[in-house]
Length: 82
Image 1 (tube, rainbow, N blue to C red):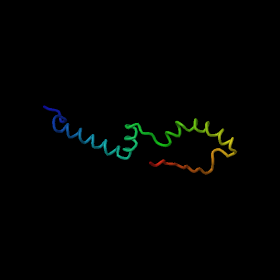
Image 2 (cartoon, rainbow, N blue to C red; image 1 turned 120 degrees about the vertical axis):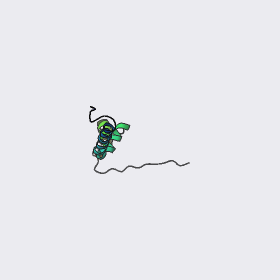
Image 3 (tube, one colour; image 1 turned 30 degrees about the vertical axis):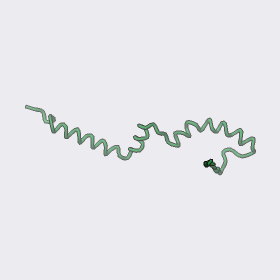
Image 4 (cartoon, rainbow, N blue to C red; image 1 turned 45 degrees about the vertical axis):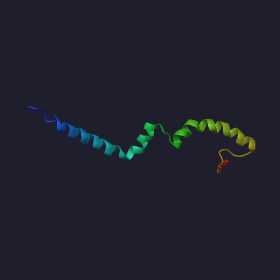
């Protein structure tokens, strides 16, 4: 007598299991893709570079007589056209 999970039934159960896993991971797909590609979020970069950047910026702000961290900040980007 053959077990119930041989042949086509086994493939069907495997396919159903894969589909269930895909459906369960849908809410986390962006996080999973970022992790697999090695992408990092802004918060990841802040944790990585924040302390060193603060240590470099604080003395310059003090020398300029400006409170650190500033309450408002404007970033200006200049582009050189051909």
